[in-house]
Length: 128
Image (cartoon, rainbow, N blue to C red; front, side, top):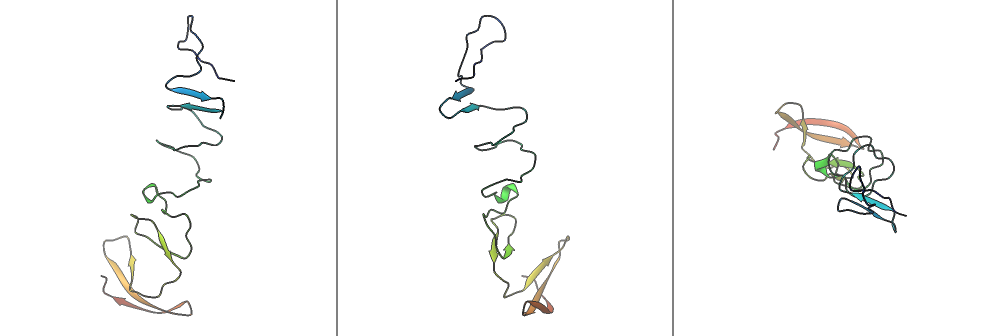
């Protein structure tokens, strides 16, 4: 079974089953085109280019940092990242100093002391 189309809107046009811009493979049932316009429903396979809107509730795979993702497939523990490379993790924090960055250009660094997972002391130190 093939979908049919013609090369014109009126006159005596022959039926077409393929072109350089629209093809159908009856073995796979795949209809391919150089572009689509209008809403898409169902599963979409392949790469999406251009603007994609809607809800990303079922995104699979790894979303690159440049596209707003973490660059990692799974993350467990405390997240470490700089916004330019893939996010990594550590199981716990064992050393300092730790830099607290606010909404201004300046920042403050602290040495933090923990006892049984509870913060027990905080001292200000120079930021490197």
